[in-house]
Every structure is written in structure tokens, then in C-alpha cells.
Image (cartoon, rainbow, N blue to C red; front, top):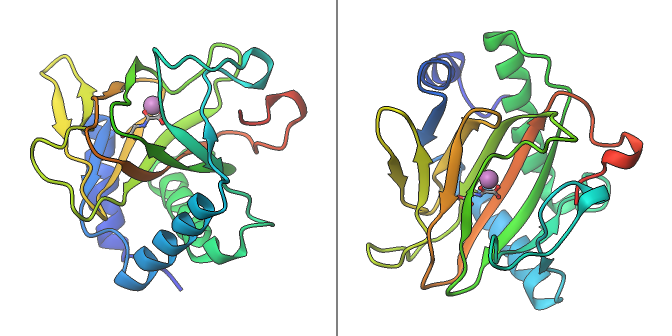
Length: 210
Ligand code: OGA
Ligand code: NI
């Protein structure tokens, strides 16, 4: 069972191919959205989120002047409650393979919480020593976000920067190697599911996600 129609995918993939990014609103069904929210709340309540670092595991470091979010890496085997989300990530992967002639064979996702006054400085999502992140995928979960709350995603493009408000149920896809981007300072807690569609599976020895 697919989440979206072929037409929807063709339309989104066209935008991704032309602009290097696409913003899709009303992405998840209400049911899936609340499943993710309750899983997220549970991880927060059980104190499962950790300070995010920068770089792959071999060069891992926590640098709060660069990024201030707390994350929880999802695991397909352990986090059974996220099954519908993994299925959706897999549909995205296979549609991109089909329509963009990519060879994406896996994905890695984490939950991310930016506490008030945190941000993520301008960066690319590929690492020098591990360049298998092809497509970045973010779904925002902030039902009460309003203008002035901050935490916008800035997408840097030669043709001008785009500010994307992190509103609930908005999905952003962009090319990880090409799009410089930044998370502006947020004044409210800012939640998302963030991840990458990979050229190689993430289980390959020393290149485990950080
Ligand atoms: C990241 C990132 C953007 C966002 O986690 O690498 O750039 O809008 N996130 O959360
Ligand atoms: Ni990023």
C-alpha cells in the first residue's frame, strides 16, 4: 500500500530535480502524525534524547556553537511504533530511485528537538569522510509555530535564500551535497524528524551514524 500517488511523486520529484529542494505540506495523515508525536513525547519523557554532535562517529564532537539540538536516532528493529514512518521513508526512497534514477539503498533518521535559544549554523549534510547522504528529509512537528517563534530553515541558493517555516506536517526534501542550509535561532522548542536517504546502507562498520 502506497502513501501517495504516482502523480504526487512525479510532481515533487520534478521540483526536487529542478530546484534542488521541495517543500510538501500536509505530508502525513493525522493518524501517522499523532503516532510520531506520541513516540516523540515518550522518548522525551524517558530522557532518551542526547546532545547532537557534528561529523561521523570517527570525528564526532559536540559543538554547541554550531548546533544545539538534542537527538534520538531511530532504529527500525527497536522502534516498532515508528513502523509506518519507516514505510513512508522507504516509499520515498524507492520513488526517488525510480523517478530520478538514483541508487538509494537505505536511510537513517533521528528525532530532533531544538530547545529555546538553539540553532544549527550554516552547513552541508555530507561529511568529507562519509559522503553517502544523498537526500535530506525533514518533517516538522510544531503545531503551535507562529511568525516570530524563529527556528526557520534557511535554504541558500544562488538565486536567493528561502526561509522555510517549521510548521507542523511540512516535509522538506533537498539534495544533501548541494544545498547549504541553516536553522535560525528558535525561541520555542522546535521538533522534527530528520534524516537522510543513503547511497549505501548505514550498517557499514565505521561509518555508523553519530
Ligand atoms: C540537520 C538540519 C534542518 C532542520 O539536522 O542537518 O540541517 O530544519 N536540520 O531541522
Ligand atoms: Ni543539515
